[in-house]
Amino acid sequence: LHVGRDTRSHSLEFSNLLIQAAEAMAIPIINHGIVTTPMLHHVVLYSNTANGSIGPTPLASRQGYLQQLAQAYVELDQLLVVVQPPNSGGGLPPLQVDGACGVGYSAMVDFQTVLSQKYSSHYASRFQARNPPSAGPLNHHCGSEHVQKQLQPPTWYDAVAAKDTDHTYCCSVDGDADRIVFFQPSPSSCWTLLDGDKIAVLIAHFFQKMLFHGEPTEAQSSHPLTLGVVQTAYA
Image 1 (cartoon, rainbow, N blue to C red):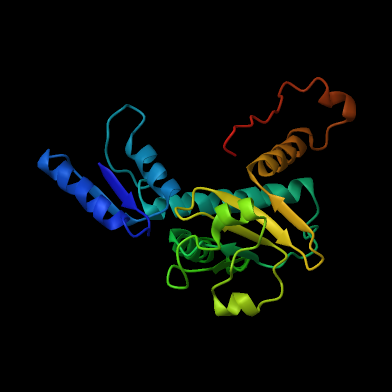
Image 2 (image 1 turned 90 degrees about the vertical axis):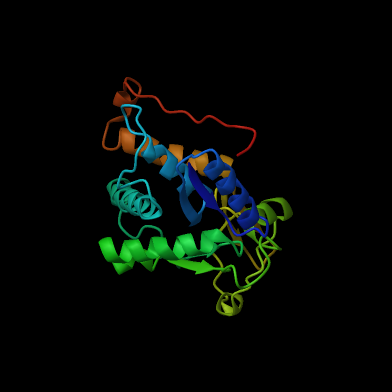
């Protein structure tokens, strides 16, 4: 049994009760402590091997998740150069990551550490983790739920972030870091929000470029691969 929890006030007690119940039934337990929901999903996935047996693998850990994510990010970045010239983004500022004063903050910091150690500090410098758990109440006027529903930027509890005037490239996760939205506030009261639907379209657009990169227009119509986006009600 893999157990993990977030930083909500009831999580520790709930986690302890679950562990006690499992111990009473003699179920083996691996307690991962404070992790994001995607991390726990990752650990469960890689603890179930291809032949159906259950056991630990190098990837079945918090560090394994971060290493796989870092590798995927770097490889995706390298693919991006194939379909558009380097620095075509106009030199974007570091992505301000609103951790919702929850577990997403520490995950972001650890992700940057892995990027620096395994690849380059250049990759890590593309992100700035904001709103740590100690800075403010969990999800209070911050996080993806607040940003998406209120159409307002999060409260930047971090003193450095609050004074930073460059909030043109931002994202927010929710309390357990399994939802994300990107946004760009503007002094002119204009608001740009990229929710799940728009993110899905952008990803599809990117892979469409990859599929047809360098091919003449007539070849696209006979390409054996097709690409679509499945929209869900909870995007």
